[in-house]
Length: 263
Image (cartoon, rainbow, N blue to C red; front, side):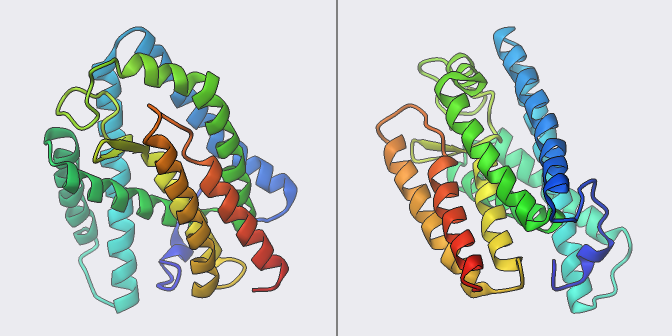
C-alpha cells in the first residue's frame, strides 16, 4: 500500500509527527476507545448478555475486514494502474467480508477460520503501521504489552475470560463462544486477534521506518516469532496468558538496536 501511493490519499485521525507530544496524543486516541470497549464487554459479561457480545464482534469483524479488503484492492489497482469502476473495490470487498464473516461466525471450519482471522489481523496491522508513525507504534506496543500483562493477571481481561468462557466451553465450537472473531483458535490453543494485529504492525513498521528495508523487517520479525513461539509453549500449560509482552519485548529491543546501528 505504501509503494502504490494509495496511502497518500488516506485520511486518518492520527498525527504524523514523531515528537513526544504527538506520540502521546496518538496513543491516547488509540487506547481510549479500546478501554471503553473493554469495559463495555466486561459489563455485558457480568450481565450475561453474551449474545450482544457476539453481535458486537461480528459487526466489528465485518466492518474491519471490509475496510482492509477495500484498501488492499484499491492499492493493487493504484499499483497496477488498473482502471476499475469507482464502486468495484467496495462491492468485491463487501462480498469477501460477508463470506469471511459467515465462515468465522457461522461454521466450525477451524482451519479456514484460522487462516481468515490471521489474514485479516495481519492486514489490519499493516494498515495501522501506515496510518501511524513509527514511534507511536512503538509506544502503543509497549503500553498494550504492559496492559495485557496486568489485565490478564488481575484486570478486566482476566474477568472477561473467566466469566465469559465457562468450564466446558469449546473455543472452536459453533455458538458456544461469545468471543468468536476476537480470538484465533487452532488445535486447542487460542490467541487474541488484537495480538496478531500488533505482531503485524510491529513487523510492518520495522520494514517501513525510518526507510523501506526488507532486511530490517525480517530481522525484527525473527525475534518476534520466537517470542510468539515461547508464548504458545507457555499457553499449552495454562488456560490463558498475556500474548503481547514477550514478542513485543523481543521485537522492540531488536528494532531499536537496528535503528541505533543505522540498519
